[in-house]
Length: 310
Image (cartoon, rainbow, N blue to C red):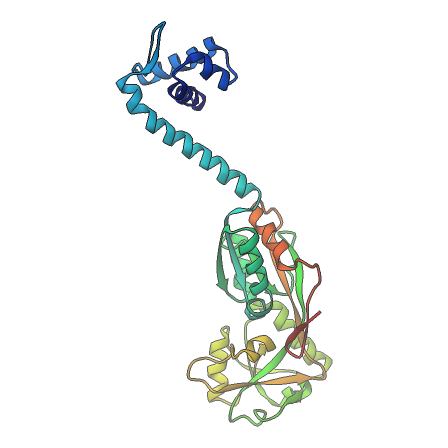
């Protein structure tokens, strides 16, 4: 059974006239008759009764017609979905993100995506940089919004936010808690809680680069890969942790039941950039539709005092 044979049958059923049906389909009458005969042969039943005076559907033809229309409608729908998906107007998109992306990138990008591509189903997943890139490589994510850019040909990237400050995280009873800011060099005298580098290489390297510039060594006494765990640790021990200013300024570093506060670091101010990352061999058009929505103006926002400035 061929799709064109179904179309020919439906046209005959609508016209009940071979000449008019053939003209609609831009076929000769013998070709149209051949389509019908092949369809009837594949089904093993007669669908159309034809005499020199009239053309009408048989009982089998009348029963077959609505089902044939459903098949044609489903094929048309499938074609529309395929075209929409190819154009990035439909499909699915899994996006990983972190706190700065949540505050300064996603609101406008998702609003534009919803307006321009309403049939694309977007799912969001908050994760640190390392886990995002792992899932991007495995196909679990389509776009990662992460700190720093990967140094591998496996990915492509675009900077979307620059100069995001990092801050110290301490408990409310810590001697730094009431200070508006602390020179980075004073970390030399503080025990610190740090995350594993693979969790967020760019953030990790920025902190240790600032330490090197300050000519100090950081005293890492504990490891915590989760920001909430860091907040818990510093709230009960005299430790110093680290977080991005956007996470701190919106209360995102606070875990339930903790009493941790953020303290700005300076001289130098450790900072990182935010990037959109996608697979080098990406074929999902919705990815590129979303990338266009991230920064419609083409400008890259810069963080200043925890706020976005252009």
